Image (cartoon, rainbow, N blue to C red; front, side):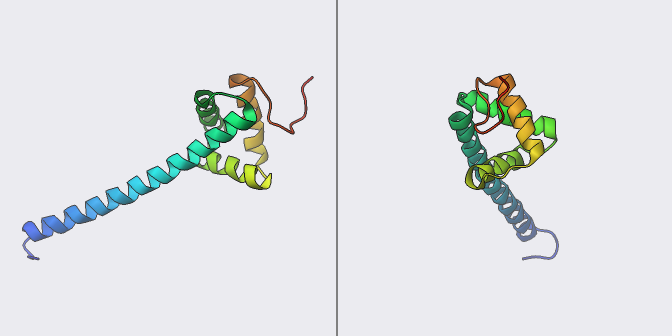
Length: 111
């Protein structure tokens, strides 16, 4: 490496930029998988289409001001442990009412 900012310095900076980009891509792939799994839960439990499931997740995220990935993670935890934040549960029930045909299983009936 040279100390005058020549090619070796530029190469090192480019390597750092590429490593950062790879890290961001890995996180994006991981986030995408979590969101896809949560959409799958909406399809199975909310009896909506995958497109409606995506809209439901976005709706919950926007109305609760919680990042979509975190909403998706909460839904996956709910599926495994039966625990979900009351704010997310209410927003999820309302979003399913707006965008899908069914309530969350176990939710009080509105009949």
